[in-house]
Image (cartoon, rainbow, N blue to C red):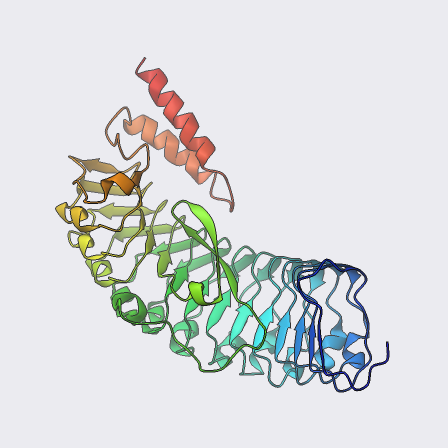
Length: 408
């Protein structure tokens, strides 16, 4: 279809189907076909047909095949959103052709290979979402050049290696870092504590080792309940941010402005050891704190009751000991609590909102029939379940039945 004068094409949120429609326009700056039923591959000559395109939205369709290299010919491209399709193969390597690229979202596809090292050439990048694909290898060192990055979501892939300290030292505007369900290892970089606007940190389901950084109390967005997430002042056109957050024991979808209200730290299912830093109690704006399935020891921080906005607390499957602090009674916003499979003793302090508090079944019976051998077996079973998206509810049911059987 030859439409030389057309500048904006918006057919989003319909039930249109068939192959991706082709327009030939050297003046078009916006093409929005998101949330339809378009299928088949993205035309290989797409970049030649609309060379001045600034926003390309093809997300939430049924597109397959590879991402055509001709997209790199769109030198003015500002937003590339291809998420939630069936795209496969590698990402085009000529990233450096995009002079003004701000958003790259290819999440929820079947893309594979490495992140191109050329990604660091256009320093304008603000949102990078490669989540839920089959990417592997290490994060390229060139990412340190992307000093305007605000959101990094690489969760649900096969990335390996250490997380570069440059993410904490060279990206002062970063507000969301989601690396869960990969194969990252090494220590959690202390430089992450420099991120004043960070309000969502999800490193769960990896192989991080060492201790939890004590300096996390420097995360100003989580330490000040009057603060707001970093705002660049630059809009993202028609792009709508969408992210999955694990909270209250389930996956919750957050969009755009509500996502900015999420205050969460998730370091679950790693190999972290040592004590939970008392400094965590300074993060008074936290809504979700999940340190479960690690090798943490010592006691629960005595001042944890300062986290008055905390809704979800999961410290299960660690080696914590001692009494539950009396300050728990001050956690008036708490609605989901899991302290199961530790070595805690004594009573659970009463909370003013106990009518609305969901306490994990095993927390109610911390010392009931969970002897050393039974606990050891349970931990081994959990280690076998560390792969992403495993339904741990089945394990809970099986262990509860075993417990009841042993007492019958």
